[in-house]
Image 1: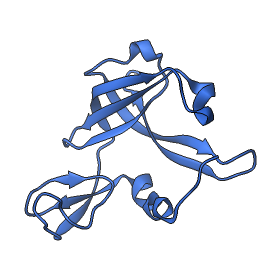
Image 2: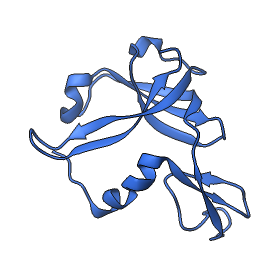
Image 3: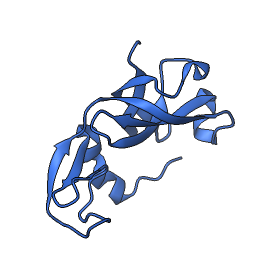
Image 4: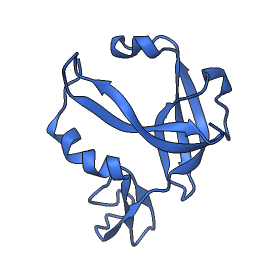
Length: 133
């Protein structure tokens, strides 16, 4: 059973809207949002919404999953580079794990990630869906 910390709850609005920090000095974008740019120490930033499309940079297939995700194994986790250059990690869904390839175009969709027991809290987040789906 998952434990939800207050940090996770505080980050939900940013994760649902895919809001990121874009720092003025370095021009780098960080997701989830950060208060300080780790490269420069800059605190001046703009809030930007990440694009919902990108390409798979690398991936792995989880064949022996943790107990709470045994029912969906095997599944693919990928790092996708979005059209603005930001990289995110997420599960690739709606295709066979053998169809996942480096360079595959994906889009971001919000889906159920997990539930806390039979009548518990549902946790939603983003997953990658092949663009051709």
